[in-house]
Length: 587
Ligand SMILES: Nc1ncnc2c1ncn2[C@@H]1O[C@H](COP(=O)(O)OP(=O)(O)OP(=O)(O)O)[C@@H](O)[C@H]1O
Image (cartoon, rainbow, N blue to C red):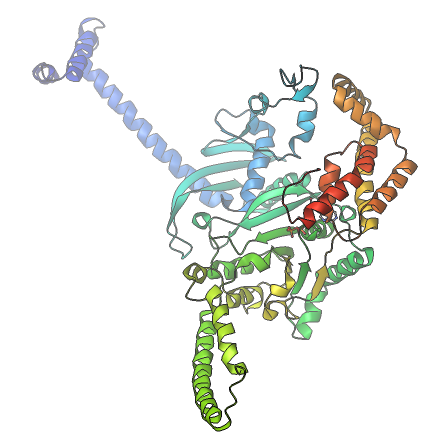
């Protein structure tokens, strides 16, 4: 019968002809009964199907009744810890199925890795090929990816326990107001045998320990996630991890530094929440750092985070992806202890509140009525007294108001989309706002701030950052060169191989060798004297620490040259400031 069917359909399609050919071959060449072969194949297929179903059922039974499991979502920080840990696990590294991931390393992470494998080229025609320059063209090829388990199930042993990790992706549609459909989201299921989930908890804490092992001396910086990726529990995204900025590197009056540190220390103490609660005071502390640009407001905030080992959450009120509602939610999704940094709040262009707008309008209408009445009265009086002098005060006031309105109100529709002052105040200390955080607001123009924003309770401590004094300029100088000298010395003391490497490399580099020589030739005492002299040559309160740092950075290995050239730089910079020019003649 099969023969008949195949003969008739054999003319129809090439596939059927192929089947017919194989069918005939089995019969004529191998002497097998093709129907029997088909029956066996069907049986094997069916057995495999049933087998896989039985296996699935057994696995489900084992999973449900003999194992315990924990789920980790891709958008949770634990996912990062887990993936890093898995990529380091010896048995995962040798797995048959892996997923390769590109790892972007920060400048600090790759320092050690790179130092032994630097590649130099000469400058070609630039300077006759005398000097050697770093070249990173082959760096991307050298950096190895990270290998993590592929999608699906992977098993491994850890501390005598058998674990299974199951990675799967699911399309996630967000019905939350944060915004429409979202990307696929991965979920990891970690399971182990037994009824106790403790081994999995231990595994996760090992993963966390490994993750933070190299970040203990680092400050993590978070920013709001892009709208499409936000979820209720995950509004913040880690954007950077920087080495802790030592407090000593920020030049500020030491008493002021000490006061702020003790204030924050007291606030962060575990007994403080009860103290606040028993007095009915909301547990919040706000700081306003004000002063000219480049005077260390941001640097000091980072140094504070480093001292207290807490993370920084940076919000820009100009971020178009953050509206009032987002801002309020962001403030509720903060960890127990952290610094929230609101930078340059003066330039935030806070939208004026619509209600305030209406109030203004009502007031304006009222005063306009009043003016009209006044005018009438005055005209009457004028007629009576013929005193036609000066405009009265109420007449001038509305003009002033309406000019204020121009900047914030209907005349500026773009401004209506931003964050209003009341929206910001509500986020900072509304009923739902997070307690326990440290809020630091920075501004260049404190006088432009609304009083409501800086009233006690919202801003508890104000710190003025000013341009550098002569002493501070000297300190900046000393820190710049003393720190590099110390680094070279540490390298020399810590390991012979490393020292040889440095010296060898610098021998190859005439410029670098020369730099080291100049730094080496200045003794600690000399350095102190040069720093003091440098400080004396910088006029008081004219230059910001950032400007002085900029000058020193261009001579970062030449302290004596910096001293020799500073007077010329001061003169040129003063002339430039006087002329209100942005163009530097001496750098
Ligand atoms: N007081 C200071 N001590 C040490 N370094 C400083 C100080 N002020 C500024 N700097 C240096 O100048 C640069 C800019 O500093 P920073 O960003 O902290 O200034 P800022 O006051 O926040 O400026 P802006 O108001 O423009 O945001 C940094 O590289 C920092 O190292």
